[in-house]
View 1 (cartoon, rainbow, N blue to C red):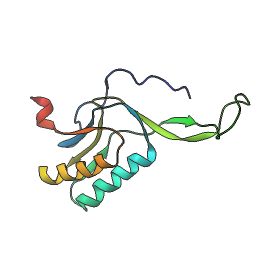
View 2 (view 1 turned 60 degrees about the vertical axis):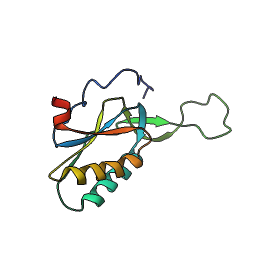
View 3 (view 1 turned 135 degrees about the vertical axis):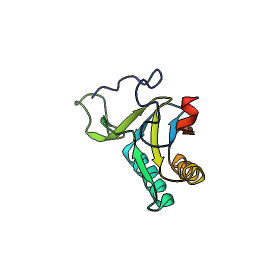
Length: 128
């Protein structure tokens, strides 16, 4: 798969569509599947079994990597992992069915697992 472009703002997935509260990306990156999973675990552990959570990003881009100290040539490298292309304004996670304080704390815990700056938003913030 080609490396593609990460320029510009998110054109889709930039509104809180399912839940009441969300976590919005403020920077651009390639977010690894392990980072998304770590954030998901942090949110579900804090919320215990209350409320509902949606993951709005999916790692569908493959990337390759050559071993260290390998000369150029000899074809394309083997698959290294899967990433999701994150642009500013992407909504990463959404939650509903919990209080704002619980949602804010669970999103704060998820944000510490991610490699970018994020912002807690609610559906009402985006509407006004």
